[in-house]
Image (cartoon, rainbow, N blue to C red; front, side, top):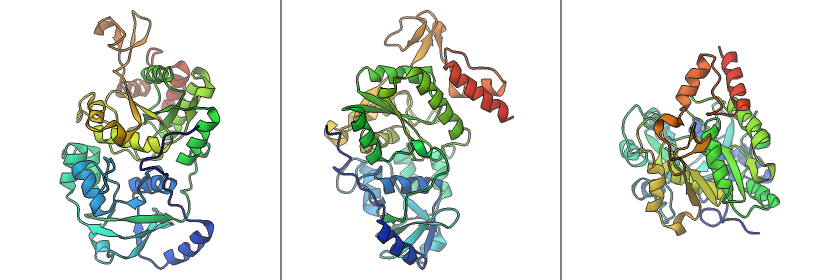
Length: 386
């Protein structure tokens, strides 16, 4: 049984062999050092394990320009999010194209060696306008661009080792591992569900509708950098576990962490999420209301409409597009405007903000919004946080 091909045809992992890593680690001691921020740390992990295939490292000027201006890499492959490494003006004075640099975490631990093929100063306002579709400084993506250095470095990386995590290691499956898992489960088709929140009843409804059409579903929660007011990862993971234990068929669902950082780039991020999920072996991706959005920067279904701008042969992975779901008190179950004939007064909509407000007051979210086991987890952690 063959799975969908990775983007570009093959998984591109950038992890050094054991023998190579030892020699590279010694060399890394004498190279200029670049400290990565949380987004860059997430990106280097994605590059290392092949989730960013076909990228071999951070984008060169040619690839960056192609993505910002044409939504394609320099060689013509669809790609919609710049994967960039920034440095300060002071560091830029000493690093030149052709150099090698050591990439480190915040503790100055070497993670990878990078061959600098490209050094350039981007137009970050142009990047924000084209990728985020706004230059409003209230947007978290614009804030990020303002916070980083003015010079970008591009070139292939060679990782000394895979990143070490202290949590959720049983759920940290690389693309080659999810592909093995799908084959073991006998799945020919699999849809991914992107989330950075606990799964509520509307999410569950979309997932189970999708399961009527594909062999399995990969619940793929993002655990890289998110907004400060998002629910913490350990709380979310506990919610996923109790939900899958009680309400999903075990042979048709898998749970694995998506190590990326959020860009909150709405439509462009939806395309990127599809591309990287293809690398994990998914044939489909659920795209619901305001996928990867924030605030009111994007239209409700902009993240669905953008897929029409790419040919089927470009992306290959199939978007599964759903309307905004809700609980209807008259129907007595979940539905959407496509399935429910009743009016707004009969529909229960609860946003994540409203739920956080309820938890802050010590109130249990209603069963129309979330399963009782999930509500118990959320309320318990809310009380502990006081």
